[in-house]
Image (tube, rainbow, N blue to C red):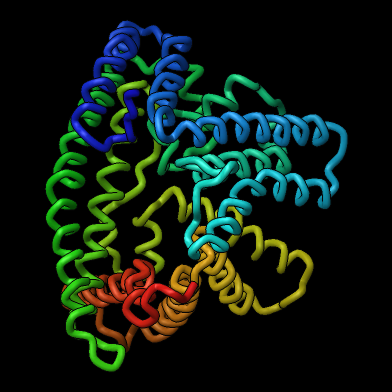
Length: 405
């Protein structure tokens, strides 16, 4: 049976573009065919999860039912009361499938594994559900619309790896039609993103992926006392492979969304031109970074200040940086290298803030020119690439032969 993985090969794009033509024609003439858009999403989800992946299909159906019950139940409750313990319990119930996914993966070879609660895109749809619960608690969302909720959660172009949209922004798009001039502009961007995505994923990533495999083999063959100069090459080749692969996918997802008349947010904004780590996280995997910023970092800071647990704002921010990135590391998986990666960036953001405060205080003594700007970009790029050496998990194989979780 035909099995199509998202944006994986030319066959997928042929079927995708054929399916999108009626939608594009309708939007061009000011009509949004909601029923057809839903049909396309359901059809592609079926083709993505049929054949050998049929268990994931059943897991997705069960997951969707579970989230409908959790979110609809909390929305009904929120109209009557607002107890904190109910909110936290609801959030935990929404996160439960993702938690089980990681625990099962940890128990089986230390990697998130497929199970009765797992399917491709589980993490990203869970973030959507939890954000909706948080915004319902805040009072920003007051009613539960079953069809809008399912379309938001199971939106085909972005379900497997994002970008992570926000419910109110998404529903504003699906309940309106862009005017012809705006839609033509969206189509022009879509064409650009499709071609750029092909360049990233099928050409540049292809070569960096091969280079990454080569340098990893060289590192293993030239290891001495737990070190090899080839590790530096692994860091850069893996980092570039990761960027072009993920950025290429994200461009395809955004382009497809634009053709469907939905302005999905961009996920990357020239991250390797960042001047510091905070700037990097404003450019890299933007929708994930902003999700953690808005729903974990900012809320933790607000809670600490409100309850006056810690009076010093700098101390609160430093704790929030480490906690935020530690949780992001755990989200990637229950392995030592993901956790260390998260802690590395948490501490890095602390140091980054210390430097910015020092620089602001001594601005008259610290030079600022094109050289210092380019040096900042160079330094940030190398720090990020070192963190990718941790993130990629190769050190687990290099040092422990893959036996340590």
